[in-house]
Length: 412
Image (cartoon, rainbow, N blue to C red; front, side):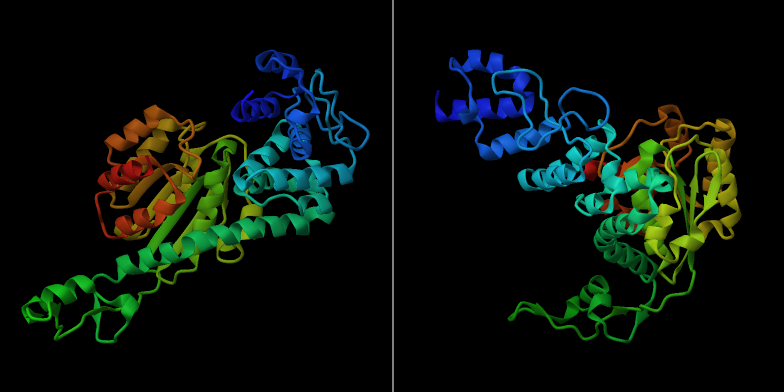
């Protein structure tokens, strides 16, 4: 075998497990033994075997310590984590040591979903070793009513870390988008580099172009007025709590908290399944509390939530309504479409986000989306990083269908 052949066989061995030994021996023409998997590879194989061994049920397949693997000669993966917290802690450490962070997130999610390893979330010493990511936050939200008291503070700390990272990612751009859009109409004599109106300054001073130095020597510099009218616009986020919308729920809730911190916006955050929960007050405080106030899963009554949100619309032409939903309606679909159409026709900047996440667009009701689009209500998936551009465009009165098409092209 060449060095490349050996590396390829090792990778296949890690992917397929011990059950593939016989076939891999035939491919290599040699008897496979421990030298194919070095010490680190054996530990990596054990970590993978604990999740992907082809068995069902919770962790609890093996007893002893060590590699916990079957012989190198064949047989199914036999590693397991048993019921011992030290073994779980070791497994978490191995996973984080051998795999990049995005793969760690996938393996952790599979540990919970494929093996039912909720112990990761219910023991403080184990949960503290879990890599914080949006998928794990979604899992904690879905199990929030079952988390033991002794683990709640650790769970909050994990959620806090993810929330803080998302806020760092979104807050500045969302604030810039809102203040920039609302302040475009006014100018101020007070100098501010961040408020410099480059376009007007350059256009007005073109006549002062110095041909020798090839510079514009401005006679007058224009700055945007950063003063804001309090509660100038109303922003309503109506969030579908369906389990398939987990990432979108998290991003939308945190975005709602960011909007609520802006004096120029009057923000309402509503979450719904078959019932409607008004989280507007919670979003003004701690976004972690907001997330723990949401219960993922359940049925869907979009019409009821839209009807509830209609009461917040006092000045349609100064209102943005964001429906974050896959549009699978369990309630009155005809009534829901009518309400959204009337809201749009009244002047409300009405948008349906089929997803607000990095995960791509989930399954959605294409017929409803098509009908809403025909009425001029854009229905599309939006990544969180594109949300500031969407909000800025809505505030500036841009054509939302064209804006949605541009954002979709940028995402694709």
